Image (tube, rainbow over all chains, first blue to last red; front, side):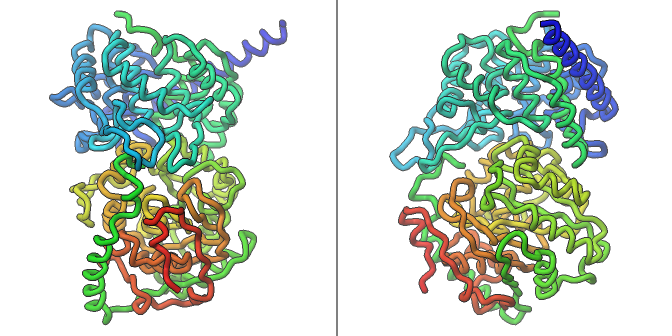
Length: 300
Length: 331
């Protein structure tokens, strides 16, 4: 028992040390225009929102990050991936979550973002006999980019933004849950959003499953959630992103996971080039735990 | 995959393809005076063959040597789509990537990097690790760029076949000056085939176009293919057909050993030749029909070197829908 506790403490110390190292890297990369994917490139809105989600609203770069997100917000409430690409609006859910962490001070921006999400949706249409995919194509969720279908990850992000703000009973949040469960792989987790195409089953993906489990945290635990958690527990995860999302998905449902594999994964990945800025933030969130994204927002 | 697709629309309409073929044929006749596109087909019995030698020979046949490569910054764009550990037919094989990088370095390229942006997974490194590509890149110190996360400037759509007025290309396109589509020889359940041209869907940043890059299917998979190739302007194609994929590609098909690498500077001619080798009629593949400005299509216009395609033809199985069966090249 002592040994177990000792190992757990060591693991937490490791997590803390790595999170601080990655946090320092994020601060080093930070620019007045936001967080770039790697030094020298144009900052991205999603990476900038992840800074707030990973480091918390009170961290040094978070105030300028929120201002950047605020400036990026368009008249209709969307916060697109880039100013010159307003149709790529999947980032609206992320930015809304970031605004939500600042409470009252960012309430108006958050509400405008949520209003936008409540009135925009991916293309959907009734199934026909000839539909080549197995999922229900008439369910309503969110696309990555305007003019295309709803997919699992943007839907999970928007659903999380709605539920965190107390709109979990909104018609669109209810619809999002229906879509997410319809896209769950039988007895397993999620991927980008295909269950079967032309009768061939697709496989679950750790990062998608972790994100959906975070999005659904707080709902009644049932067999569908249990099978996704079981998938995450047993799935191979050797890369920083898959380790991060396995840990986030499990932690969202109160289950621990080890941090020690993160070290080797980060070393292996960075030997091919710097980690993406948003991925650095997602690693920090995983190592420190996703508590700030669970439950309903509280005014600080 | 687009949900607007139905089985009947899988490949596109044959009528449209026929009309396009007629137009394309006229344009091709006009350009017959121009240099004929060269396509090299070389045999490799498996991935332990001397692939670098074969690629170097193919490049020489295609007119790519030190003069064309000295000082150039080369981007190799493989086809890395899934994590199938140990399966040879899903992704461009790591040994093909290694050999290509070696040849470009040997021929004087200033730099060689590998870049990819998979359509179905946000975690690109998962694919690199599962396929062994990550190990090859580390062993040979080849840099990697994740195209999904590094968008560059918005460029005018030079193809103009879709309703998209412009395309966001990855930043690395402006940092390199010799782009190689290092594709896989596969059947494709929406496009008929996926070869060097369709491979460039992976250039489009996921952080803009999503996972999968569904909008590019909604605007028309064939039209989007032509738009992307026209805008990216790749310089060379190398298609890994040592073990390809037949049937329900690009993910769920079966291995098909063709034992070949196919190369050339004219991507349309390379894809048309690959299709013929696969027993597929290139004049029934809408993106090939719709891209006369991008290269040659008819057998008469393509100067083939190395193995004659007829001698190495090996029919790839087609999924059992009439639209796919209709792609079969007559003997």
